[in-house]
Amino acid sequence: MQKIQFLKLSAISVLFSFVVGCAGTSVRDTREIAYSGQPRPTQVLIYNFAASPEDIQQNSSIFAKIQGQLANTNQTAEEIKLGREVADAMATELTQKIAALGLNPIRADQNLRVSPGAILITGQFTNINEGNRLRRNVIGLGMGQSSLDSKVRVLAPSASGYQELISFDTHADSGEMPGAAVMGPAGAAAGAGTAAVIGANAAVGGVKSYKSASAQQAKTMAEKIADELARYFAQQGWINPDLVR
Image (cartoon, rainbow, N blue to C red; front, side, top):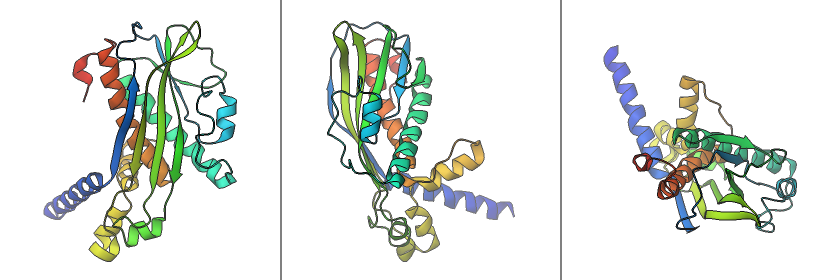
């Protein structure tokens, strides 16, 4: 019995490694102030990334430079709902990652007064594509692929408005994983992508789970964002360099 259980766990481990290896997350087009001269921030204000024109209007002061960059400005109610779920997943995960760096993250919105010693993490999703889950799970190999793209900006309040410290683009997708048609039931599990991994973790650890593939990708994207920010924060002398991965 123990041997069977061990084999099951081993198979799951191999499968999860395969899933993570096939999905893709990347950072590109980084622009930064090499040395800002800013002291260690007293607060790191994390805003839900904009996923609709309404989001930009509600936070017009911090989103002033990103209007017109959303791929879909005529969204359905379902797309708006999806965007909010994705934004919540991103901000929730990013808050945890920033806290792990030893800083003081705070979930923020337009009603929060920005103090002089704070920095702001903002951005917007330029693409939220759920893909086709059935094709992704059954066929795989990139068919029905889901993808997510965002622009990330870190700002600091100044006498002349918000100063941009660093900005970059991020991308995540479900990769070219084989589905059930190629690998049978194991392929179907792999075709579920990151959602399968996060779903299992949620069942064990009681963490908040999300239904959409894009929300799962947003959590993975938040890890990559945190890694990029950690490098910059260490460069500024705000965190221990040993925390940079």
